Length: 398
Image (cartoon, rainbow, N blue to C red; front, side):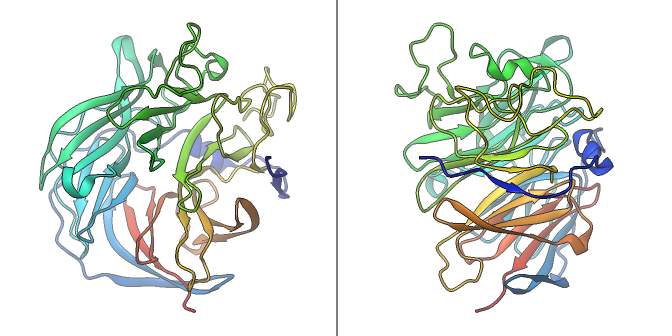
């Protein structure tokens, strides 16, 4: 049974910052930058949280609109830059030259090089997954995922693992995040490419959460397998622009969060074959202040209400669970980056139930693009800027 919807009771108002979130800056691909020398990590400042003082340490800077960070077993990092570069960052903060072999990306509008994650068998395979906007004919583009073998300075065995079809013209709403369920499946979130009706069309992949086997094939138990009017890759539909996706380590459930329009950012725990309503049900309106034309309200028969909704959009991005650290005051939390709000949102969890919310890092005045949790209980975030930074958060002690 689904839990009741939890609503953040915030005043509903137009935010110029949110509009900026929807029209990204810095779209041109810059010339590849040289490797940067290692800089000794220094605390940037101490910030407060409900659980106590948090020390924020800058690991690296000078990243151009970094979009995703993956934590490597050697203590280093992989970081994507949206214009189309993948870099290594050492544990000491040295930023490499761009790695060779990255697929060609369509770096326009909100498109570019997006998520990077390590394959479940990375320790032996050195395989990584990359999501990106892939160019198509006549100025079109679509979300795609490639796999590759990671070398010191080069990607090899690069293969397109998944591509959104059909490709559409337009610069917005590509998603995209990648998550594994621990059962041999990979989930890929996407946007509806700012073409609202596509979210409800089962013969199109826009606005869908898809589920594939780790070899790229379609699982036989996907909900629409065998239907001639539906794409077999689809797990759930009726989504807008999913830029948050993570697996709860306690349960194996997939959680996703997506941008609403003006208002109505939401979290869902997608179930197979379910319709999550966009654009027929929504808590948001158009940026012009007018009603979404297709919307009938916040609920409708046969459509799932959001699991958690913000009436004023923080503009959600990366997502990570903080679990398995019973000695930490942050244990059993869900972190989400917030772009327009310029914060790191921490949701307290009791099982699946969201019991509280706080917003961290407001002091930095930065758009938080991604968040990951290390095995040591440290939290890592990326700031979205021309001079983007990789930061480490040392949680409150005790």
